[in-house]
Image (cartoon, rainbow over all chains, first blue to last red):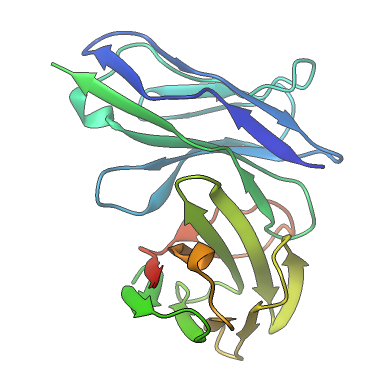
Length: 112
Length: 115
């Protein structure tokens, strides 16, 4: 079946460090891929997305490239800030409509 | 534009009872999806409604049901509550123009505690 596997957390980084959160997927069809973020005390919000192979989604300094050959959509940021502390979810949607499959989430804490 | 709203925000019920949760999507959004979020299982898809019809369904027992009204508002019902139903229930809406994988906008959730 369709599923997403993402890096276990929690992840703790110092400010300005490089961030990578790994995400791989299994899909029967041709999925769209997403990263959602949940800041403390807030709801889930879209961070970035990619809808076809080799597309790169980017937002707020975060990037992820849709890699069909490795079935991956890893999230990266060159220099994290304290304000990036949150839980990050990788997700895919493959069916007609909006049936999303989410990873388990990776908690990121950035320390000054 | 107002975001997705969910009511109530918190609920405490006992085993065997039933509960109804409500979701009002962003104005103009026609697709509403429901998710269950727990520490152990993460975010799991319950079902999606579009134009008052259930379009997709996750792997949850029949005790979980939903519906959508003509104004796109949606309700979710859980009957015969079990302790394991304690979770954060999230509603998400999307505009629905392309038919697949539209950006979903999430509400704050309803936290349900079953005692």
